[in-house]
Length: 123
Picture 1 (cartoon, rainbow, N blue to C red):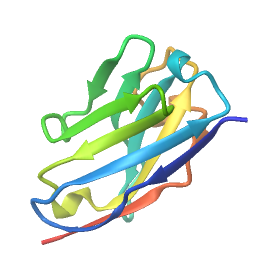
Picture 2 (picture 1 turned 180 degrees about the vertical axis):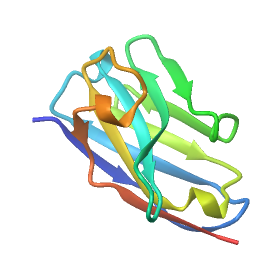
Picture 3 (picture 1 turned 60 degrees about the vertical axis):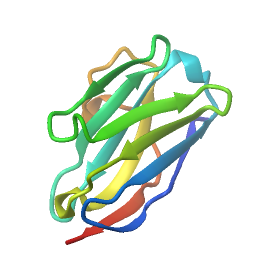
Picture 4 (picture 1 turned 90 degrees about the vertical axis):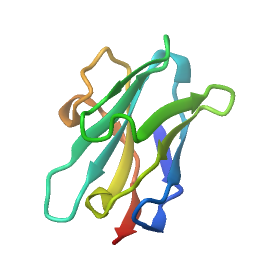
């Protein structure tokens, strides 16, 4: 069974940084696509960044490119999202998701999801 557990969320002032972790189990990590997604209050869930684990190619959505970095520790089967220069509009529940792929970096394409971790950015 594919399992993903996010951690690392919390509260931060605008301009601050957080690093989210996504611990995975139940699948061959190297063979999957993994992504980070966000659902802001009152909004639909959106894709932020995805990583093709097999060849370490990363994709970023425009609104986070240059501020967020997706990465992975293959030995730990864990993915990360380093978030810098956080702004109040980055507030939301952050999810990681995995899929055997190949899939576009879009919410509807990913099959397995974690429970999410809350990030709150104050002004």
